[in-house]
Length: 110
Image 1: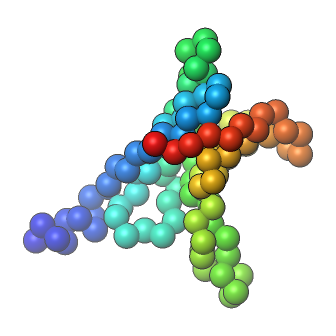
Image 2: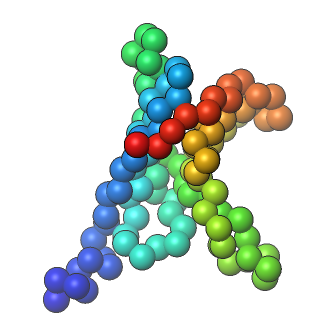
C-alpha cells in the first residue's frame, strides 16, 4: 500500500541555483515518476537587496523524434506577464521579455 501511495502523493523536490546576483530555489511539486511537470515553483531572491519573486511554471524538455514525446530535460520555465524566466540544467539563468534579454547569468546548482 505504501508503494502505491508514492505514485499518488505529490513529491516535493527542491534545488537551488546560485548566480553572482541571484539565488533561485526551484521546487518540483509533481508526483514521483512524472517525466514532465506543470507544477514547479520558482522563488528568486536578489542577493544584493533581498527582494524576491515567486512564480509557478513547468519543466522544459527537448522533443523526441516523434515531435510529441518529451526527451532530454533542459530546465525550468516561468512566466510573469511578458517576462520569461528560464533556469537551465547547465546553470544558466535567463530572463527575457520577448526576444529582448534582460538578464543572463551563469551559476551553479546546489
